[in-house]
Image (cartoon, rainbow, N blue to C red; front, top):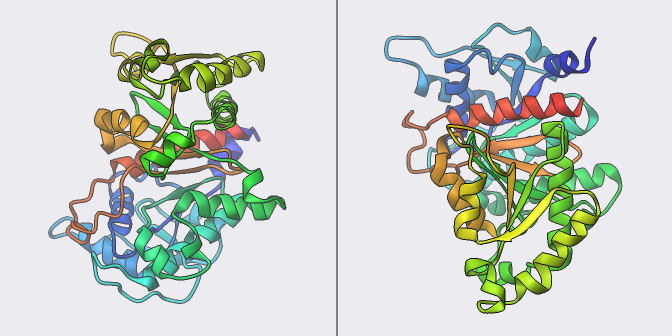
Length: 356
């Protein structure tokens, strides 16, 4: 059997996310709208919550999709199309009110992520896709989950424990991607002041290495990496700041010495246009390395938040997620859009095939 066939036959885990948010209903909508994309998937979550979500998204006059409780990940491969396979990692959660911060929901969501991460690490599932967590609920759950700002740090901790190393020895980066653009961030959830301080030679070199390694496997070739400057006009030769001269250019030189196809630093207000997929031809760059969170995420989200996917690079497992939050304001209304989740599932499958 080929490695691609093996990857296709392995189940893929989708964590439910916060039960009070839109995660359960976008999952139910995905099963409703695209049975082929969800074939062989399982939801790590709460059966009653998924049944409620299936009722919310059922078309008028139609019965809700069936929800089956499974005990092993492999069982998901034997269910009919449009049947939501749910593996419940702990006792019933109970129905959490829509749109309300709940410590119980935060703890349950955290347990789902830990189960899926461990399953991905030991090979029980081929990849994991995470529906949105609510950071306040995760913090309200208390330890161990309150120690982590979100998915990325929790997954980094689980993977490091599995490998027998410290989290500091397993650096990870966030990549946000849609059909038009990919960007990887040097830093993520920091204040702007702290994010500027995080623009160091070592952090940039590490980001370039992680980006090159991950996208080489995904694309089957060395990626063309563009590096955004930190300052307006990429510093204008030092007139608007010296970070480009003293930190970013030396890091790019080091990456090139290691055989990476890296160029820049480029003016941040134009480099993303150069890396955007053109309707009439190929993009100039495969990915942009951005210096901080909003510098990279604003252009990607502007170009299409509905199909944006968050990918964690640097982990010994495949993890993607939709590019939106829990949307408490519309949870339970059936209005949430599943397209970003579906894109995350498709990308996770493609990445797991590339790794195999």
